[in-house]
Length: 262
Ligand SMILES: NC(=O)c1ccc[n+]([C@@H]2O[C@H](COP(=O)([O-])OP(=O)(O)OC[C@H]3O[C@@H](n4cnc5c(N)ncnc54)[C@H](OP(=O)(O)O)[C@@H]3O)[C@@H](O)[C@H]2O)c1
Image (tube, rainbow, N blue to C red):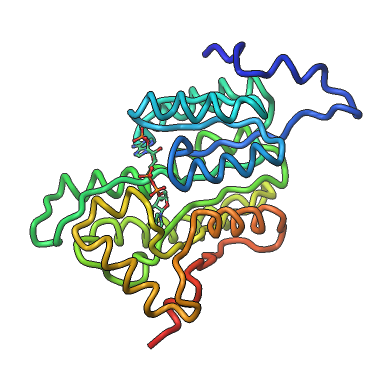
């Protein structure tokens, strides 16, 4: 991996006056909510490793924009390939040192009524959305600082049903179970593991679902403040969680109170 043109050299030597930058890894960090998280972390001075799958032009655009502020590198790695994740984390560690934050934000899946799905659809959706967190944790934990954080981006679908969302719902419920289990297993590493479960956010992603626009309308009608969520609401929740040491194994719901309304 060549990280020489990533802006790293402009940092100068690591001294008490010029400490190493914190390093963050974000799966799916090149667009949507992941990119908003990357922008916040860049503003806070993190060096950023952004993992994506196949939209190379968008990844380059995100990298070039963020590099005006901090060292940034992008990696086209399918999160279903755990050994590739391990190679990637080793490269990041060699170039930038220990990683203090890993965010599993990447998600994909087959949007269909469950009666029209196959075992292949199920495997694919679970492997990316839930399995990706296990692969990421296996790869990143040995390369993390003490008092590091792992955050998974979940959705309300882990707890409620939406049309055509059955496989993704199942994957997000599994993701939240994995978060609780990792929090237990990583206690001795002093690494916290939490999830953020967001409600529907106006985004390109929702256009992939037939009912996407009506989910947004229903959300705004029902939520107490009658306003939509934004990507920034998720970013703020993440920023809060990574300031905490004793919030662990939790799912922080970011839905403006939507689920509390009868
Ligand atoms: N949007 C919403 O309304 C909403 C609501 C609640 C929760 N969420 C959750 O928030 C997270 C981000 O959602 P979003 O709508 O911002 O996503 P998005 O715009 O669809 O972006 C998905 C990102 O994940 C990457 N990715 C997908 N499959 C991958 C794989 N197998 N390996 C590596 N990277 C992969 C994509 O890379 P490429 O660009 O290369 O494809 C892209 O960077 C997801 O976990 C989602 O479930 C979203």
